Image 1 (cartoon, rainbow, N blue to C red):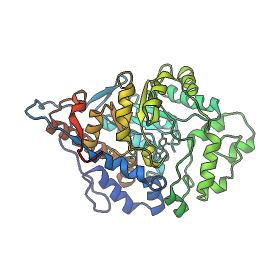
Image 2 (cartoon, rainbow, N blue to C red):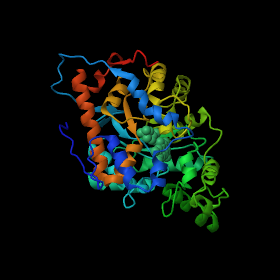
Image 3 (cartoon, rainbow, N blue to C red):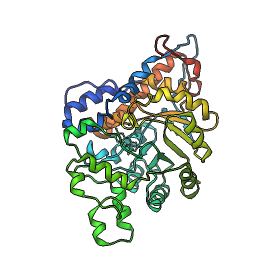
Image 4 (tube, helix red, strand yellow):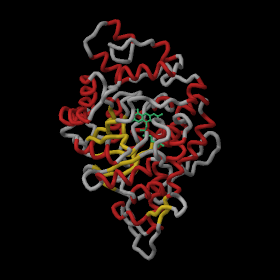
Length: 406
Ligand code: FNR
């Protein structure tokens, strides 16, 4: 149990007390185009803003005179113990914030804090490198999950997931909200490329390197060899080129049958969570298709602008499938009280995305540990004042909607 979180002083002299402090510090440290690539949302950024502000319309109903002498923030997810009900959501290109270690730093940090790390298919360190870095530091298999997409190239989809299974990853996120990427106007204005040199989406590189093909296609593209990609455009900050090229890679006509197929072919021994569910209807479909869990998420406001805040979509998903499978959520979680509200609304655990990038940029692996410890301390304090001794005790009656909050 953590009683006091260490504080980290960023090079900016900004005292870090909470998750948002990392954002403020990162903003002053990072080049504007990079900061805005990480921080911005789609179109008017309505969903981006509401992901955070919607938590403020849910109010806690503290109960008093209850035993809280031995509070535990620990929980269990698919038989895997977490020290806190907060995990690192899979998000690409961590090397933009830690060039030397990339995802190895953030994954190790999650292990040190006692929680699970989601590795994005769009990571800048390979599936095996991250597993190796964690095992070397911990002396055992880490709590790592791998996140995939349904690709047009179904064989590559399977090979990537099987690589993760072979490397000891303990679960799979299938992200289903990204058949198109949201258009971030900040990036267009900044002329930002999603993948500046020398960073690479190494997991595709390795697939392409290991797949029999012509030597020309091998060296010319990180995308599928079939795709005719103008690589100079990707690296030149042409947002349209980036979108078009990922559209060449991703399946544009996925069906629930693909979920059945993935579960059957590559995830029979691993839990499969469908990430990016925002409605009761799709949650029901996902479970029917064989998902072991669903994750309520709007991609942190980077997908559809005008979508409901994730915390407001959570109740209908929990009502639809919460008695059958664990429901996870992310998008907008910044405080221990946010975590507690999500737990009360039926989430089994919650993920964080942008704060991890910001902490990584400010202080690398140690800062990500500190970020998770801050959240753990905040969750624990909120639990104490609410009279909640364990994660399982965070019941629906713990939260209420503000009378004027809709
Ligand atoms: C993401 N996210 C994401 N999700 C995913 O399934 N695969 C991915 O490769 C990425 N990549 C990615 C990059 C960046 C820069 C960001 C900020 C986010 C979404 C991520 O998993 C998560 O859903 C959101 O970040 C959660 O919202 P918050 O915590 O950022 O508000």
